[in-house]
Image (cartoon, rainbow, N blue to C red; front, side):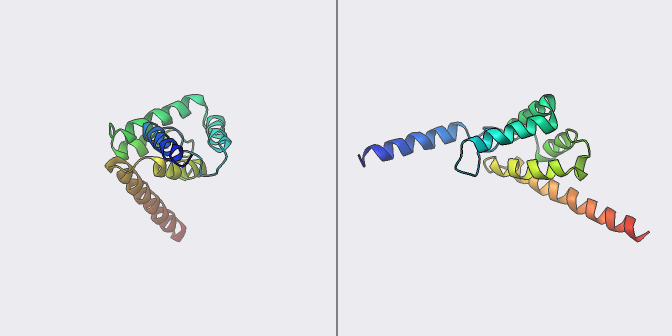
Length: 129
């Protein structure tokens, strides 16, 4: 039986590699329904059309067909309050972390942080006047 386990493990790893661009990110909990819940929540809050655009953009970023900046700029358009939208910050960072590491992902994360920093500076300046 011990010989069968590694074969299953190899098969699982191969499946994981094939689904590396799966959307949304795999659930971090052990329950398989966690990912499905997240998908349903995203569809409900964003609407099916915006969800599909986000999925398409995420797949393009994972395949390095678009830049990280383009991904963030396009993604921000999908959220009613843009950079200030709490849903953007709850969905997008974990989504980016789920993408296999590549230049586009790192670029997107860096760009997102620079936008957040600029927003904080702008809010501080506004509150001082």
